Image 1: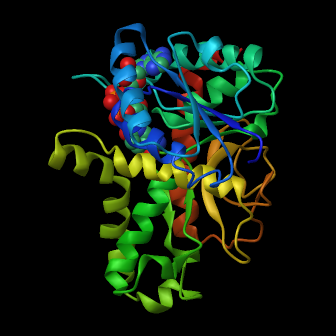
Image 2: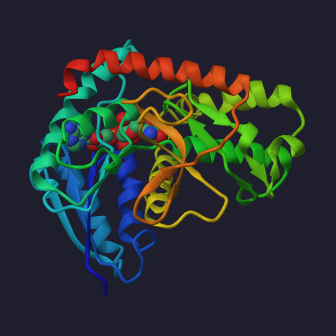
Length: 327
Ligand code: NAX
């Protein structure tokens, strides 16, 4: 067996946690030969529920599950971890505006950023809890000793949603769709870049020629998918979000296939595609299994540039709302 990997999941008793933990424990992410220790962080009032989830994890008898550690204290939960999946946050309540949610959840990520700084060193931090880009920015700013490039926020769900929609329209398998970049914020301003996506290695726009559908129905379906799921299910997306979090970790952990890329929100440094520095911005990335790099040379049309401007402005405004939390 290889060296054990320690993975913290916050909000472990929540909906996403209930799907995510089992897949992390199963061996599918870190391999059949890597023991996994799960560090579950929850609020004190949800510890009992976390204990119930832990019992079910035990009852799966996953050969790779080496330990379960339940905490209501972030520093204890993050001690010596290699991955932090920050899922737990406050859901948007009735009448709450996006800025109210940003202000309500920001302090969680100040505390968790500081706890990570004290308790972990060789760690990769993935933020899922919304608003995930700005929460990731807050955590990163409050974690001075860990390189900013170790922080990311999840837009893999948006990428998966976009791929499925075009695959269904083109009547091909979803695996035939590649190079689907998501630019910007995980919000209704996100930009699913159909112009640079490929179907079976050919430009998507040469296979799907209905430009009007791509610019309207496709765009809004992807941008508003989360709301459509809440409307249908009465609850926000959970299993698909957990599955995307698994994809996100695998994307970072394994070398990217030649010619392809994946999307995640990472710290912008002002050197790519005119995106201002100091945002947590979803970009097309490649991984060598250890570090990621931004894919260069993607051509952006005026249509896509205008959409990217909207999502950039939204992220700049979110950063302004939380500026006093950025340490
Ligand atoms: P749930 O409300 O089911 O679970 C959240 C859990 O977090 C609760 O058990 C709660 O006790 C816990 N929690 C709250 N504050 C905490 C803290 N300070 N420390 C530790 N635990 C804490 O939400 P769920 O459906 O699991 O969603 C979790 C988050 O993911 C939400 O913010 C949600 O908006 C976000 N999502 C992000 C997505 C993405 O693509 N980035 C998509 C799915 C989802 O909407």
